[in-house]
Image 1: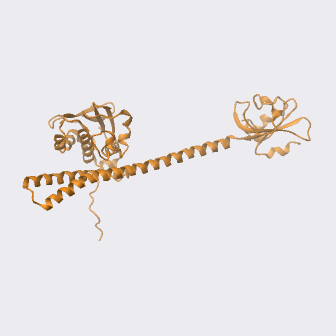
Image 2 (image 1 turned 120 degrees about the vertical axis):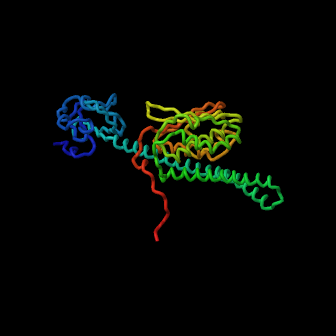
Image 3 (image 1 turned 90 degrees about the horizontal axis):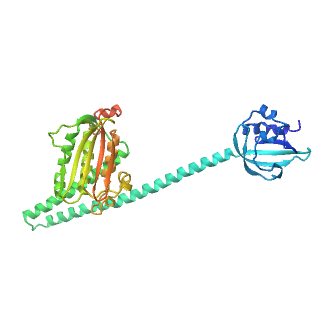
Length: 376
């Protein structure tokens, strides 16, 4: 057969005559057009357009490769490079050479997709690097302020010559600034440990009222100093029960209430509400303040980590770890956290704790005490 040479070609070959009737097609062309080889052979001596629709292209005028869309008889669309040549030794025969471009296009799409992923990873690494630098600047600033107060107070006490009342003022300053440093260091350590999944949790069914009352008692002096009133359910009020880790939810409550006081206005209020959501199976704790509020566009940003709280208020500073740390803790315990806020009116931070066991069994087992390295 005069066209047997084309049977083994990887690319498609079609031959047509001067009337544009199909004369021959190889197996590769059949596959490209979505046909069996037998069906393609049965199409011979019929109009080429019934087998492969090349649109309005005049095939006899194509002597260089062109990128076209070819439509098979079953509607299959093929992105192809085609070249048409007149067969030199066979009268009135033209050969269409079909090169399937879908493979190359798919490879190109895959390459572009992988390139975008790499670019996104690079952007994330750059952002992480910026976050690290910003965190170092913020932490250095936060450490320098209390350290300066500590050094100054100690220097004055060391030199002596001051009365007992003044000494007490400087001792109180040392205690207050030391407590601030301890809280800062603990927040950094907790945030780092949660990020590396090295936290131990012990989840049990407890009364949420108790952890609220105990946690907020530790902030009464801070609230009085900032002239902010805290209103919460009394210890005698009925309390809802849910599943949480006593220590870590205590951290969350203290962080949220601390922020509500810190970013409040003088003579402002912090109201704490507890309610039940039977529909989704949560106990909900709301901490509402009358502070400066947060722009809605920053809602997601404030939970992302190392956002300076100067972005939330022009009156305060800090590393901004309270909210990211609280979010990680609540989510690790099977809950969720959200915020509502109106600028210049105040904010409501709301977190949800499950009323039933929704976590892996290990969360409900008390972790062993760390007794240190006992090896001889």
